[in-house]
Image: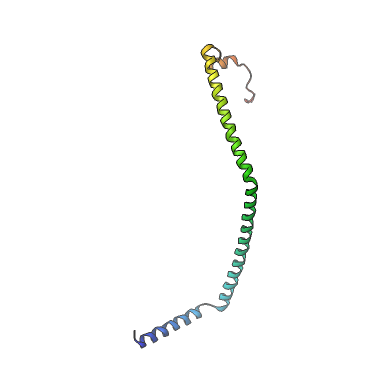
Length: 123
């Protein structure tokens, strides 16, 4: 580029920046800066609160995690025990039904034998 072109570009950029400065009121810029500082303060406060909450949550989780693991193992053990019990009950019921076919009535017989009133139906 020639020196004249460079000077023309510099002059044009100065003119454009001067025009932008006249478009914006200095009081509006000051109020925008003030609002941005207020928003920055609120965001910093929110960040501090969230950091404190994260620390508190981490502390609480550390306290209950061992109990949670213990209770989870206990529940799994209880489920296995119940599955075994129900398996044994099914096999005993099958053996009893094979030996005594009338020991367990079917659905139609149950309704005929059960004459108790249904307490959930409004009378």
